[in-house]
Image (cartoon, rainbow, N blue to C red; front, side):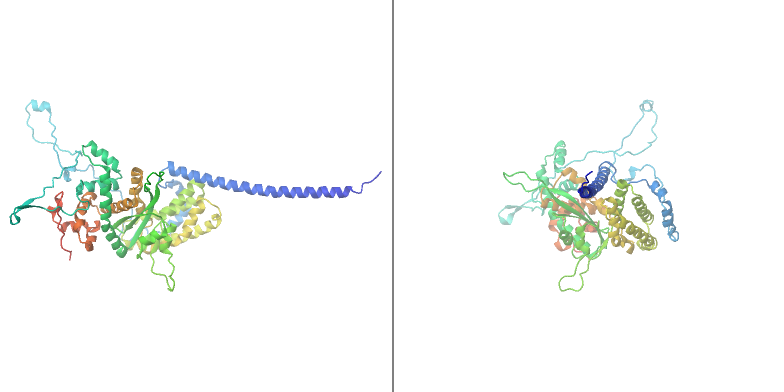
Length: 547
């Protein structure tokens, strides 16, 4: 028998080839496995994003979750945190428990200032029987009678000047913002409040007036809105300067609006571009709306230039220009900058989104911890700011130290994974200092919800009027909305206020414009001639400066 000497060599070659093939397959398997794992992560992320979008579209806007379930799930942690507050639960001389208001029954409308119309109901049988009526049993109902436009006859006196050969002179018209406009100040005020206070577009106002037999074109309304809004901007600027100098805390937020592009003759139609409305709340004094074409750091820096107090915002990157100011060239220290105050409502919203999409117990625990902060804030709402500040530092100081330490530990484990959970914990870790800032003073708020509520005027309005015709129209609208919101802040009827200042501004000294701001209006209104101001049209006499 012959023995082949090449067999061992061929066997080794085949084995080597198989090993190379196995290595190649293993490498390919690793690539496929990595791609599969990546696809799984991307799928899970998309699933969570879809669930979050569905919640935002179809579920309630508020962050609602079963609070009883949270208390049961984290009963031990809740009891541990609450045990730290036992020495501060009931401040001396204060009752912080929630008391339900006693109902007062049906309101007595006869005590109101509403016009009254009496309606007597008699019994036909008693009348026929000749029975004596000895009185009436009275109750009140709330009715409505449609008001409407009125025709103001402007009668300008004509005088015969004998010394000039019998020539005739006519009394001059008062100074007006919109000269010889069809609309009197009262109609201007109504149009502005209907649109910028209640979101009623000009074309709907036009249709409603047509049903009442009034002809007022939307083009006239648009001209009134732009000219009056731009002119009344002097009041807003004066109030803003006052706030920059004296406000303790400015709370701000922003939202987008659509701006109609300039029409190009014989050119293609263009889509609306995006602008932004900023709202700023200055303590309990002023509310400002500002239109900015771009949502940028430069716009924010210009809005708050010169202010060095507290600013409460939502941690958007555009506000970094305010809080992270670097020293200029040649300077050792940066200029004075405002202090950033965070918003626990934004932090709660991120934990809520993480809880409903990932169902992670750590997200629910974050909700429970933040909920305890809001519960205590509600209990202390009526306390004096000084007392509230003491309680915050005593109770919340311990809670927040434990909360942020726990958040940092969790974030170390989830920071490399994209998704709502990492976003929620990353937010509170990065915002630890701003979120703790409210401990410094009892006047600071734990959330920025007041700014978001103020922005509802813009959010609701843009669903109705859809867009602004130009940047100038948006700026004019911001001025009017600022005055309307400030009127509501001081319980002033916006239409009556606007009607009065529309007549006052053309003759008012520019160095005293702050007297016309809503925060000072009641005092200014008391110094004006009531006879002049109660008339629907005519001259207004400027009172002397207040000493």
